[in-house]
Image (cartoon, rainbow, N blue to C red; front, side, top):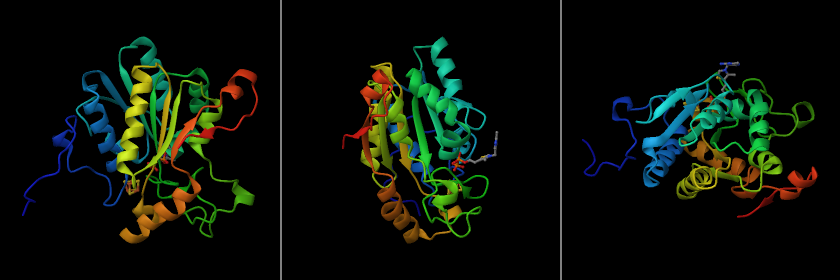
Length: 262
Ligand SMILES: Cc1ncc(C[n+]2csc(CCOP(=O)(O)OP(=O)(O)O)c2C)c(N)n1
Ligand code: SF4
């Protein structure tokens, strides 16, 4: 039997593509719902272009009633930076996994942050390459077991797990918006995404939001273990909040540390 009151969905929700194809317990649907609501509440639907990367994010290619482009792995940001240059009136949203953003697409992320491309970037960090079977990613936590680190990630061999917002904030322009949210803090995540859209629309700046997310399929966790891993391990290693781009790093070429605002 259907519940008496169905949950309210964003106005850009595309009913024909539901139910969606993400696994049960996956965080992608939560991030996308936040994005859909943010686009609707800011009345941007008629000029927003949504672009998704290779990886599980590509399952969102027909998720919204929005113009959508699906790009090669790691190439979503330069595709949208180019689109924005020729059609500056559009609002462009790049939706990527941590593998796409921080491994194969890292060069584009660094270049876009340096150029302050007016694109809103959302990176879903689930600590693994999910779609290809759970291999170790740049964001895999120390000691975390994956398909390619069956005894746990060894920092001595693979380096520390990469913190995306901290990296972007250390090279981005002072006007850029940088934050890290989590699917376990939905209102905060949606607020960050809204601010990220405003940074593009009102300020003409890059916005970068990382969303900590769940992948029970590759973590091989049940519901309770999934949430524990997210809230106890990931939140500890990847602090939530907004990050101030380091003005001095840009002006003087120095390695100033980005400050966390909240
Ligand atoms: C150029 C290129 N290299 C590798 C692949 C194979 N590949 C497809 S998805 C993927 C991993 C995706 O991981 P991530 O970007 O973190 O997204 P997730 O699936 O975790 O959401 C890889 C390596 C590819 N499609 N193209
Ligand atoms: S493999 Fe992981 S990230 Fe991909 S849809 Fe399933 S739960 Fe989500």
